[in-house]
Length: 421
Image (cartoon, rainbow, N blue to C red):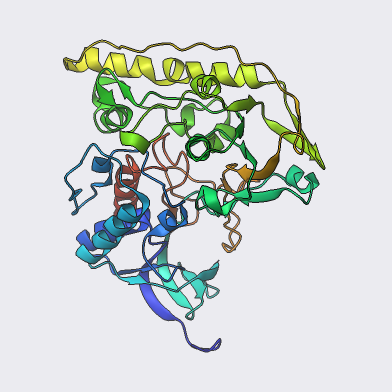
């Protein structure tokens, strides 16, 4: 379509056809709302297509059940590999006849310039005018590599987890993994299993058990989200965070590999992995780390007890559910602080950055953003009439950016849009 072509009109536009955008599409269809879903990729499957070859869900397969489409496989308590996850969401899109337009990148979102309510979306396939726009692009958009990485020796290959696929694609030698969130601990395990010497730079990330009182941790999260309010044991919501920067904290480390298991950093060290503190900078072949390894390990060890265990136990008490007591087995190992590594002496050939993502909403030309890049909103609703977001970290609570809470967040937005009319 030529640049001067007239804009076509659509009542509601959803930007992004990942799981959040598809759930929203189903709910809009049920509400009788005309809409389209714009997806910049040429294939469906969302960001799952960017995961590494051996990736598996961290949450059990049953968490992929969404409105109008339950999990279809034979292992609800298993953990799907990457390609099955992609197939699942493609099948969902087909089953709900989602009006997805692929290969359609939104390059600009701006208000109508004639005084009417609504927006113009400039896209790679021409402009669209919409009364309402739901940005379902999630919170994992641009791979983030700390600027300090630029000071590393040119000999070192630097790879972000977004671009990592498998161990044998990396140069021979040891690997320094920077970041101990969910991706970091899984990739560190994978590399060690592949015979690599692994150094893991540990950040301020929590740890949760795979199972607590004979239930998977995601069973607990789902029950607290769906039923917790009725008994006064809800998950923390964004308004209760002591510091808004906590919205960008890493996800607690956990794994869906090998049937699902816990990832204890002290056990990693006992099995030969070299742990260091938070990456601070580099000077050629020398990498520097904060002397905070001990503090970060203690934070990981106490995260569940301080943030979630009390809620789980109170939920059991108030609902009368019969569950066995906890059988947690503490594991303690003192790990020495290391504040500097000679990368050449340690035969480190690769730095694998598992340092997360940054929000990238620069295409939205509206004054709604904090300095952090997060839109100012309440439960996804901005102060610009008709503009909402879905799938943001801590959109309402700690489950908003994962599969256990996206449906509730989407339902709230649909109710808001209906009330607006």
